[in-house]
Image (cartoon, rainbow, N blue to C red; front, side, top):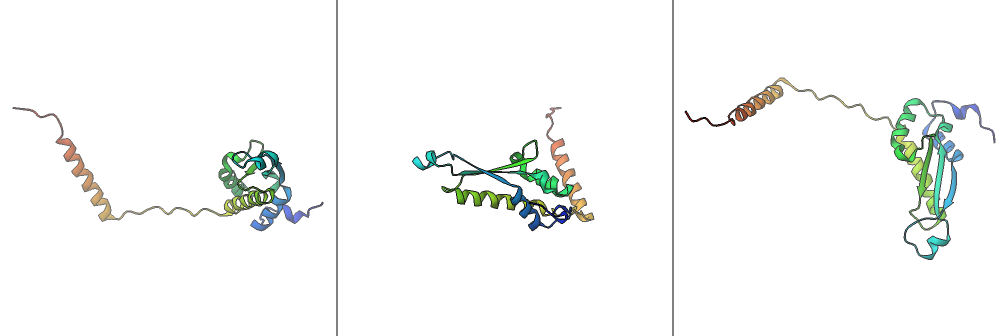
Amino acid sequence: MTLSHSVFSMADSVESVIERALLFATESFIAASGPGGQNVNKVATAVQLRLNIYALRLSPEIFQRFKVLAGSRMTAKGELVFTARRFRTQEANRADARERLEELIREAFQVPEKRAKTRLNRIGKEQRLAGKKLRGTVKAGRGKVQFD
């Protein structure tokens, strides 16, 4: 399997990165835990999806967002690990793991909006300072009572 140079370009679209991620992802089936009776003990229905995120060749900004979003699902070696055990069948758990991977990649590609600083007008500032002055006078009157 050979991949063209354009697949590894830095300015990739979300769809091409998702496609590449699903190509590089490895899946293994493990025994699920929890309720399910005999089926859960016999059949390995849980899916563990692993992906080396360095293989995706993400731009530094997207990589940083990806790392933050992945959190504890990412190992120190840069491997992303998803464990899907929500459903009773391998196929459903496999689809769930792949869906969660796609969702994480899409979220990493979304640039967060810059927060606009709030601007306080003159009247608002005067009201705030007047309120502080009032609280200060209330607190100043709370001292020990002196009987003269």
